[in-house]
Amino acid sequence: MTDSAAKHLLDWYAGNARDLPWRNPPGAPLPADPDWPYRVWLSEVMLQQTTVAAVQGYFATFTARWPTVAALAAADDGEVMQAWAGLGYYARARNLLACARAVVRDHGGRFPAEEASLRSLPGIGDYTAAAIAAFAFGAHAIVIDGNVERVVTRLHAIDTPLPAARPRIRAELAALVPADAAGDFAQGLMDLAGRICTPRAPRCLICPLQPGCRAAASADPTRWPVKAAKRPRPTRHGTAWWIEAEGQVLTVVRPGKGLLGGMRALPSCDWRGDPTPPIAGDWRDLGAVSHGFTHFELVLAVRALHLPAKPALAGDWLNVDDVATAGLPTLFQKAAMLARATSLEAA
Image: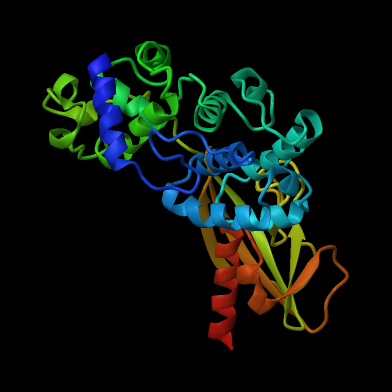
């Protein structure tokens, strides 16, 4: 990418930038709002491995309910985890609270502007630190995510597989990020990747970077980025228990650490261990649901027990009709839907 290509990108972005509640318009001065960095940080955490379309509603809910980092830091853990339900990757929600509390405790309720200080906060890595520095504070930062990697590897036809290609990608960008427009430059690349330089069927003919793009000049621009072969994802098995009595169902809060930590769920076994139910009874097999996690696929058998009275078990009893809105993570929402559908068929 040349300096002229960077200018073409910024010109294109000025006329095509998406209007998003956490984004400053291209070329505009940074907002005077002292909570602007909070909004940028919140959006970046939500957007990790999640689409813009999925995030917008959650962002509106969070900023209405917790409009400042201090408000979020003071929030109840369970309420935040419930509000997060459906966004996935629940360690982000735990780190969200830990980071908010660290900002209040160690930085007087204001995010630091320097990348190194940002990286010291829970849940903030290299990308997020650079994004906050550039988007919230106007710093000269090199912001690289998967979208940026795709554009740069195509521009230069970089044949080194990811992640080994990342030092070359950073080097290609380092000299080109405009000192006074690092945020617009990065967000322009991201918008270009999302709308023109897409993973499949890139629209090279209308791309502002097409004249100097080596991938566009090739017969197959989708060859890039080159990725290392994926390891096969293992399948694990577990069991969830639907215990219903007096029109209510038992739910529990999972341990704070580990997969889906701190989330409300149905009782379940450790999916590495023995599926012993929490109480003896005439259990009925309802079938199974499955869900893909980052490192494995989980197949969860669902078993149901209907009792005339609530047994003495640890947890919270919810009305059966309220389970769908109780903030269960997607895996357990699937299990609850299967249990409810089976109950309705049997009625």
